[in-house]
Length: 145
Length: 145
Length: 145
Length: 145
Image (cartoon, rainbow over all chains, first blue to last red):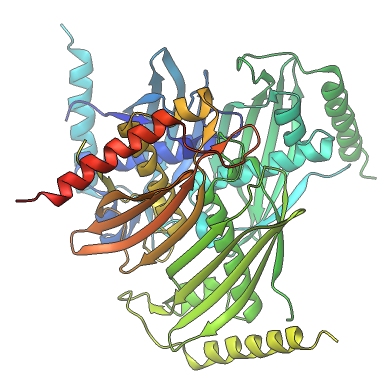
């Protein structure tokens, strides 16, 4: 698991009357990318959420939209872990088209109990899987030679 | 025009399988609030976008989600202009429920030509209307006595 | 409770790059109208779904879209009960703009247990409320003189 | 081009607080499948809509939802042309999960001018491509031996 790169064509239904991506649709797509990330880490949301009653709501989001995307554009979503806290996970996203970066985002997820929607520490097995990914990813990035 | 406060009930279709607001749906609602703001300022988007070919895409967004909302919750969206730049508009949003603030956002819109999607200065009449609103709003907030 | 008529402005985010309403967004709005209908009948979905664990999923839908709507259009959604079955509810929708009907839909909802997603008979109190509405509505429509 | 079968995992953001697919999201996915179909036929929507100013709005839709889908379910969307009219295209959709059919839909698209949103006959090249697909598809289905 050395790469979290997802390709997604921008669809008609993702765009608005000005002919470019509607930013709430961008975030809907981003959420799907994060969902795939969790599956790749070994904790698919259906298990985490439905079985273990652990949610990962977004508590912070910063987006910079540099260049517009049009429907039909093929976009690449790249995601890396920025930081792993006691009950938080910082993700950094870069979204690119044929001409380079279109937008980027920093997102913080919080581990929560779905019983009362309060923050909880990451369970040990979830933390271990995130750390394993973090290390693999760092090594991959640190050793290009 | 002294108030930009909009009430909106959180609907079933705005929520996700964990039972709380889906954040991309929150941003879809927020975009509707901004659309109403433009109508109140005197430049409804259908005129601005379709007739005058001026877009106001979001170029920056920062959100902090403090507390979850459940479907059926009545939310109040408040919006104020933070700053008016040459071709930008900074908006500050606070979204509250019965128990206080649920989330807040800072959003920067850019004036763009819909012909080439490049930034343009605000047209004089649009700028004048935004300034008028800014002043009315500041006076309203500055003179509560 | 003699009328189920809801006004809703078509928003930027409801429309697509061809400049008219995106039909899945139309159905998202329609679902919100049905949600308001249930609240008016006396059984808001948050109570029905979250507390009583009764769902009302759509099992059938027929739509005819006659004329396009553009963003900024003010639409009126009218809804009436067509038929009330043992565990089903047939709704008839007409959506109009300034120039008359834009689209219409027939929708069948089924009462289901959210424990196993199987059909159940309408509980007595829910049925009574729907019947009361049905009668009020019929009288209202039957006595225009 | 003998098959229009698309796989799509049902995502968290496609589902609702009752834990199953939200039907307007289903239709948003369906629209993406139709978009891919047009690309496969040789007339991607960005070309048809943006360059040639031809729209293909949905004028009729009938859906039967037989069984619920949960997030994480892998769905197969199959599409065939039911009939090709002078300015209409009838599509038949079947959506299946691991346990068989989940829902089906009949959809009629109309060729329209995006200048005035009125119906137009299919242009000759578009019609030829649809007919070619129709024939290939019929042969494929007619000759299983």
